[in-house]
Length: 231
Image 1 (spheres, rainbow, N blue to C red):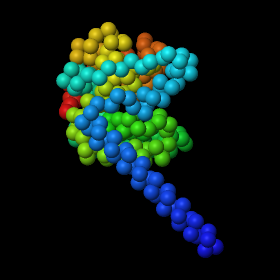
Image 2: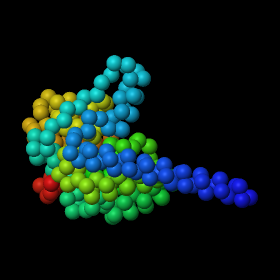
Image 3: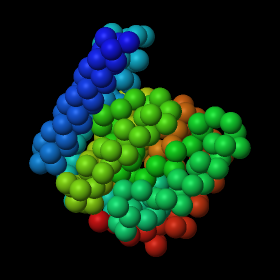
Image 4: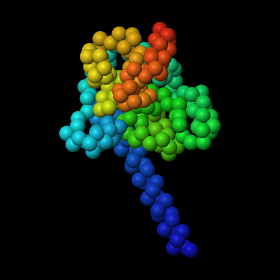
């Protein structure tokens, strides 16, 4: 029994050590990307691997553009659609999370996360799209890192440049050109609202651009954009 106890303690210490190293690795990347733009993300790598199963030559559409070259209409639309309290909260929308928990309990499975823009960015940069409470816990740790070390403007700039907007389409510039043939800086209010409406299910809306639900969401977002506060 003493031998078993020693083995368990060592295994526990080794596990804790690995966890600490993992968190330090994440922290290093958060610090680095605070000053330098990400070339790729975990989410992009996953999607590219999926595309290359069917087409080994597949490539992603993504082009980084600085914050000031992204339409103010798109910034307002994303805030209105995804996280109205973004500039005020510290990474978490507790009311939204409570509603998500209640929805998950009613459904008996994980269907909603109540994620803020900061949480979505944490997931996209480092994690998989798999829905689980373990992933949500890791997402929360990374979110705290982002909110502590980055400005709201930097969080929003990176978010707008890396989120998925269609099959192999990532970031505002690629989305604007993919759907409208214009630069991200040239997007008008309705175009921006429509792109914001696609964010929760971008690959579906890429295939079904005339979906009635998207038109309805676009109208709702347009009505909220005037009150949206952006960094």
